[in-house]
Length: 187
Image (tube, rainbow, N blue to C red; front, side):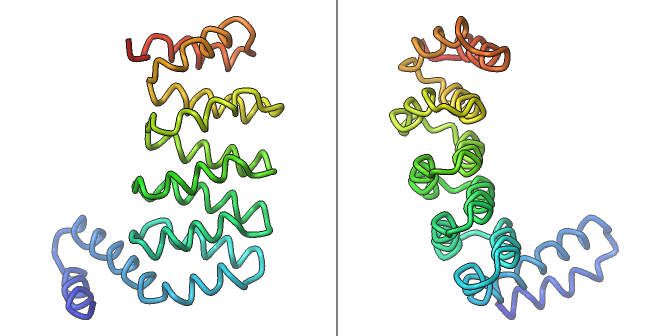
């Protein structure tokens, strides 16, 4: 880590402005990684706002330990912390978060479920369609809209009947999502 830090500090002196900016961003990520254990402890025992800040601090770094911290935050008593964790896990770009997001689909809070669905859409993974389809019957229209987007993002033909249903019975936003999905769906 010291060698990386040394290289990044040196790059802060580079004449190229863009390279200096990249070096500064990378140095900031290294500093977050240096404090990772303290951040994880804050997620487990801090006040709600501290927990949320700690969860968002994880957004730009990667690794198994970071995913585990996000998964832990998805089980926090505060729905705000759980929703933040779902949003951040969407930024990881790592398919290992998908089972954790799918588990969050069962959360009692519509806000958390919507956040998990927003994160899930970024992965376009049809392996979990059987977990998405029941959400199309959720009483919260926002959850249904997000679930439609997630199902549509997979392009999976198994959702064809559901999409047809929403072109007729859905609100205008649901209809638009379903109509787009029908055009993009696998044969």
